[in-house]
Structures are given as structure tokens and as C-alpha cells.
Amino acid sequence: MGGDSLRKLMDYKPTQFMAEDAHYDKAAADYAVGFIECLCHTKGTWAGKPFELIDWQERIIRDIFGILKPNGYRQFNTAYVEIPKKQGKSELAAAVALLLCCGDGEERAEVYGCAADRQQASIVFEVAADMVRMCPALGKRVKLLASQKRMVYLPTNSFYQVLSAEAYSKHGFNVHGVVFDELHTQPNRKLFDVMTKGSGDARAQPLYFLITTAGTDTNSICYETHAKAQDILEGRKRDLTFYPVIYGAGIDEDWTSPKVWKKANPSLGITVGIDKVKAACESAQQNPGEENSFRQLRLNQWVKQSVRWMPMERWDACSHPVHEDELEGRVCYGGLDLSSTMDITAFILVFPPRTEEETFIVLPYFWMPEDNIDLRVRRDHVPYDVWQRQGFLETTEGNVVHYGYIEKFIERLGEKFNIREIAFDRWGAVQMVQNLEGMGFTVVPFGQGFASMSPPTKELMKLVLEQRIAHGGHPVLRWNMDNIFIRTDPAGNIKADKAKSTEKIDGAVALIMALDRAVRCGNDVSESVYDERGILIL
Image (tube, rainbow, N blue to C red):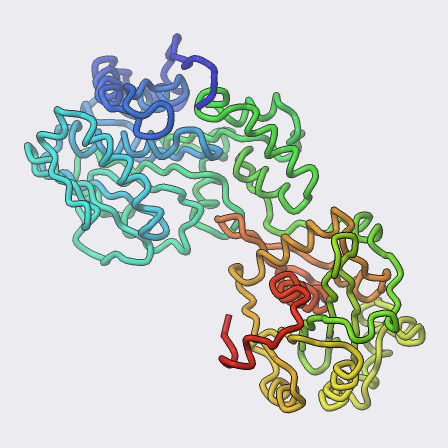
């Protein structure tokens, strides 16, 4: 944890969203704060030390548990807390789950920990289980059923159970509390609706505690709830049962400013050191592909996934001349992207360096059907005809791409260069693959998901930034690179997104596949492993 001493809440004032007829019950709030502060931290340097609430955390707990309606029940039944990562989110969520299960005086309380998948849902549960193990008073009264991800508080027969979006049954919930962790990762709204609509009707004061970092999908249940919280915060909507908290930077604020980091990260200097944020910011400035994830995870901004990825001035700096004749006989790896038959087909060769001083060399080839070229120039406003005249793009007879012609062309390239492998999108061309194999090529299917695409995509960016790749300034490939939009998954993996990239990116995808093989296999001129064991489906 960081170096600042813990900031305590000095001057608590009840939230502006307190209803006119509600009141702040200090004893109820003190009880909730006292319960949580009897627990211990479970991780890092603070493990085993009492869980002292930071000022912003205490404010949330006092507002939720201390503001009561005239009938003595809690005013708020939904709390939405949106906050950057590393602010002590999981620990607060685990403490709230334990308070609802063991300290809320509810008989047979049902408390559920929900997340997108079992692994994510288990994070908060494991923290809560460690808190129980470290607290003798709870340890005596709570039965932990670790394999079922369930704990039972024996005095009231209440339980806390993990549920995930991938495994839950639809009925029979009598909810007293739900803790939703990382709401932005929910694949759809099914679990959310089941847990929050009607399942707590039989309880006097159910609480839905939603805690998340900003996401990227503006069509999600999380964004819908975020928009509602925003509307309430800015006075456009009123809902006296809903308690909104959003810590983050405004979309127009300077994301590189330490002032902005401070505003967005209420635990800065306590649970996360400013040096960590500074290092992540510098890395994002160096590598534009990281800017979005920095803004989303560290500043809690809802950024669209799609940001143009390649800084073209850095790409252009790698336009060193490439002479085909000088590469004869050298080891190389192909990437083949066969888009629809009406479109451009790309075949890219990547030559790995033989020495420390050499760079990766890229040789691109593109084809499109002859008959549609004029139409396409008019429609796409792209100079295909100029590129054809300059020899950067070949056309094949007719109005669909002539695969037989391309196969022959690749066969001739195979006589000239030592093409070790050709990677292709496995959803593509079955026939062509068979034909290329018949010519003696080793053809390797290449998955288009995050797992296969992320490492070579990141590697390509790294090589471009370090100027360790030469592509001869090929205009069609340049156009493809400039068109790339990137999608990021929650784990920070990236891939080129064909759907978001409105223009063509086939050459870029073919380059990424060929590069992957070139990096993995390098200049090995021994027999290919594929010769012995057949093709491995990645």
C-alpha cells in the first residue's frame, strides 16, 4: 500500500439525497462502521491489521446504513459505487456482504455475491472468507463451505452464496442482500434482473450493493445504471431509494494530470501509490494502444473501445526500402487473409532478423477482382486504380477474386523464398488451404480471438515503436494499418476489430498472423514440427 497515513472521516454530513422525512441515525451508522472496523485486511502489507475505513468508504457506509425512513428501515435499497481499480473495492464489497449476512439482525438472510463468472465472483468471497478466519468472534459462528463458495452464519441461519452469470437458477431467491462485483463485465442483464426485480419483496430492507469500474460497452446493464446514477447526481432524475457514487475524471479532463488522478482515485497514496499511476500514465503516453485502458481502469472513464490504434507517424518512420531480390532463399512466414471473394485478399511475408542488428522485413501482396475496381474507387473513395498502376495491388480476372491465380502466385514465391509456414484464418478458405498443402506448404490455422491475436498485435506495436521492422512504405498496407480499431477485453488483451474498423484491415490481420509465426519460430531452418505431427489447431 502507499505511504500516506489513512484519511479518516472528520466532518460527516448526511448525503444530499436524504429524503425529507428520513433521518440520520448515528447509532445505526456507528454500528455498521464498528462492525466493519472489527474485521481485518486480508492482503498485502496491511494483512491482519484492522480494517479502518478510509474517509470515502466510511461516508458510503454511514449514508447507506445510517439514513433511515420514519418506519426505521433503510432509505436506500440500491447503492451504485463506480470507482477506478485498486481503491480497496473488493475489501469494501466483502465487508458489506458480511455485515448483511452476519450483522444486520435479519433471520435467515440470503446474501448473494454476483459477478460475470465464477472466478470473478469468488474474488470477493475469498476476501470475506479470509476476514472470517481472521476474526475469532465470526470464526466461531460462521461455517465456511469453501467448495460450494458458501458461508452460513449459524445464530440466524443466514448465508452468503456466490452466483455467477454463467450458473444460476431462475427462481426461489428471497434476497436480503446482493453484492455485484464489476457490474461492467456482466454479459447480459439476466442475472441482474433476477436478483434485483422482485426477489427482495419479502424482506423489510434488502440492499443491492453494486460496485464496479467503468466499462466500455454502452449497451450494457452497467452503463444503464451508470447513466441513472449520473442523472441523479446531476439533478435530472430523482429516485430516493438509489444511492449514487461515481469517482472518476470528466471525459474532457486532462488524463495526464496528477490533479485529475487525485480527484478520480479517492484512495490514492493509501491503497495505490501515485508512482504506480504515474508509471501507467507514462506507459500509455508512449503506447497509444494503452491510453484507453489507462483511462478506463485508472480514471474510471467510459471510453469507447475503439480508438485508432497505430500512430501513423511512427509507422511511417519504418518505411525503410525493402528489396525483394535481396531476400531470395531466406526463411520467412506467410499470413493469408481471404476476405470475401469480392474484396481485397492479402498475403504478407515476414522475414525474421538473422542477427541482432537486422530488423523484421515485411513483403506485402494484395489482389482484388478486376471488374469491380472502378466501382470500388467511386464507392470507397480509395485509389485502388492508382495502386494497381503503381504495382502495389494486382487484379485478377472477373468479378470475384481468382483463388487459383493467387495459389499459383504463392507457389512461385515459394520457389524464391524459404516459406516455412503460412498462417490463415481458420474460418476461411478450406479448398485453398488443401491446394497449398498439396503444393508442399505447411499451413497453420490461426484463431482470431483475443488469446491468439493479442500477443502478436502487442508485439507489432512494440517493433514499430522501436523501429525494428521495415515495410518499404507500401501504400495499401499503410492504409490498412491506419484503419485498425482495437478491442480490449477485461484482462487487457487486444485484437483488431473488423466490425469497428469500417475500412479494410485484411493486410494488417495477415501481417499480425505472419509476425506471430516469425517471432515464435525465428530463423529455424530445421524440419518443421508440423512435418511429424500434423497441424495443431490454435
